[in-house]
Structure formats: structure tokens, C-alpha cells
Amino acid sequence: MSFPTEKKYLKVTLCLKKRDDLTNEQFSEYWRTTHADLALSNKTFMDKVRRYNQHHATPEMKEVARSWGNPTLDFDGIAEVWVDDLEAWQEISADQDFLDKILPDEKQFLKHPITIMLGYDNTVIGDRAPR
Image (cartoon, rainbow, N blue to C red; front, top):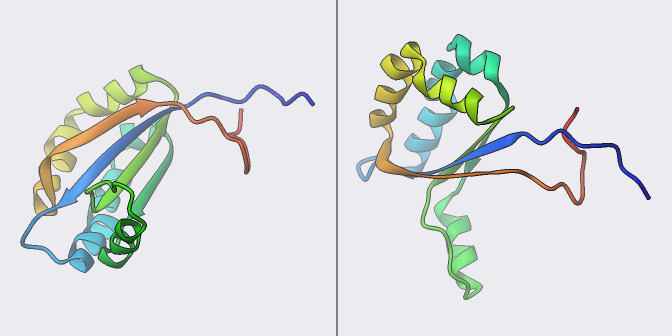
């Protein structure tokens, strides 16, 4: 069986830890609303990003994962940002509005440093990325 060529987007995976003084609910609410709204108001982000997913990990789900006996990631959330290529991500990261508004806002709910991974998806089951 032959599949059509799939567009290979660069996936920027950002592994996040909440500030110690915030509850999981406060962290998730702020990230889901205020911080996401800032990202959506940034022209470069909106022009360059093809997909933006937020993975919110609850303490209960982390405990279930730990109970299986495997090592687990110690993060409270993971942001996935899909862009066309590394240059697009670099443009977002260098955007002055991004630097002035979005990065400083991270201090409202995140601990630094943020762990990052760059890579590509290989879809095995599910819809492939549009070309």
C-alpha cells in the first residue's frame, strides 16, 4: 500500500513545570486561558504555527502512571507547537512582541528552565498532517 507524501512539520515539544506556589488547577487554568490568549494575539505566532496542543497532566494521572512501575516524566504539562521548519520557530522566538509579552508571562505560572525537544512525527494510526 502506498500513502501520499506527508508534510513533515517540525514539532517543538516544551516540557513544563508549574510554579511551586500554584495548584495544578491554577497552573492549568492560567496556561489554558491567559497564556494561550497571549500566544494567539501574536501575529508571528499565528502566521507560523500550524498546530498548538497543550497536554495537561493531573496529579491523579501522574500517580496512575507511577503505579505501573515505569519511570515517569516529572512535568505538569507539555506544549506541542508545529511549525514548517526550524526557521519558522526561530522567527517566533526572535519576534519582539513575543519577547516583550509572551516570554515574561511565563513567570506567572512556570518554573524555568523549560525542557525542549525538536523532532518530527511519524503517524502510524490516525489522520496524517495535511500537505
